[in-house]
Length: 255
Image 1 (tube, rainbow, N blue to C red):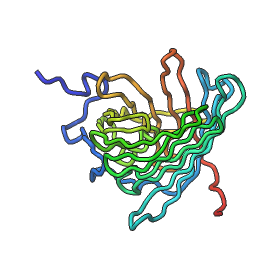
Image 2: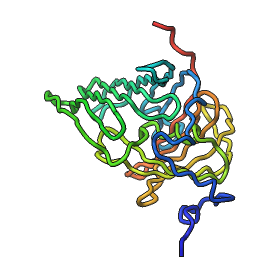
Image 3: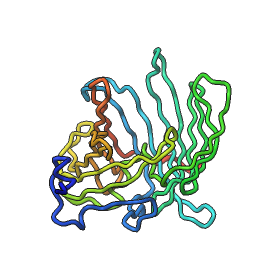
């Protein structure tokens, strides 16, 4: 007997099989054009939202062209508490296809000495990496089993597909530490009202789970205008919950 995926996940079942969308990178169901240039600020709290933020960052999206392709350029700059006190600053720059969300470039730097510079072409990932505290730069040349969307920006995918209660989406994801793509499941549970820094926001509630063991990775609250993700909860291995609140901010002046 085949048990529907929605029953295994204990989420509302789609009205028809057409509402279960199985994606690969490049799928026509993904429309990144829904994302307009914008900027936003994210504050992260461990446990209660009343606690002081443990991390904060800004996201800024601009659109452009690269080798004849329309691309998204994301710049993320943030600070977080260091493991031994103090503050760590970091910057992440990502280039994605503006329509399919396929990743093309990934570059991160951190004040703790970490550095990653990667280019992606389908399943091929090449570049360099230096771990925090290390003086040696390591080459990276990995061929994945299948292309993946960027795991650190997984919340972009459901909105680019379209949000409708009961929809279930499966898709492969990649991060710099991976040597193969990891399939994940998104379930659109319906709309809910969340408190975002004192404002009540109506948003779509979306659960993200790992496909292999159905472990809950995150719960996202998404809207179709800036900042797109307004609130998120990530369960941590120690039993705590990481809570993220995101609000729109003015874009920086052109340089």
